[in-house]
Length: 161
Image (cartoon, rainbow, N blue to C red):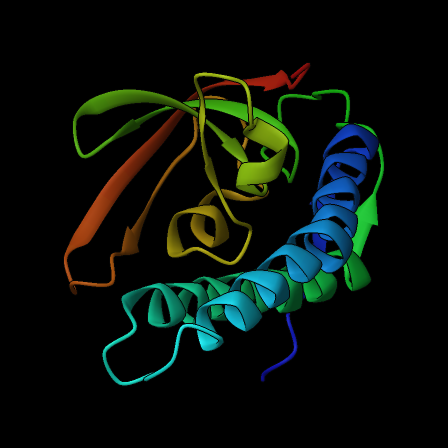
């Protein structure tokens, strides 16, 4: 697995992810093991849909555990920066993107959880193009589909969650 770059998390988001990791690593992991054992006792595993469903769920749980472990290991925990009118991780951005106005957070989706805002990781092409820009500045970036997209920063705010 490739190592994940550091990502900004508020203390609240870090705590939520740590609690989810604890729940998955203890309670959910133990529950799925019991379900697999129970399904195994039913006999022929080839045609045992309960067994296969439990094994699939176990795979999803283990993948999420790995993802959370990496994310928390590389998290930079701090409060959202006070906006100085410059786009940076943890700020709420209003921008005109390809002609449409959008308001979003630069940071992880975990920070934006419970809000109506979408979040763009600092590693996305959009975020990489606009970090460091000030209100009123414009740029463009190349989307994954190869299309060049214009962006103008309309506002930068402190994210309060």
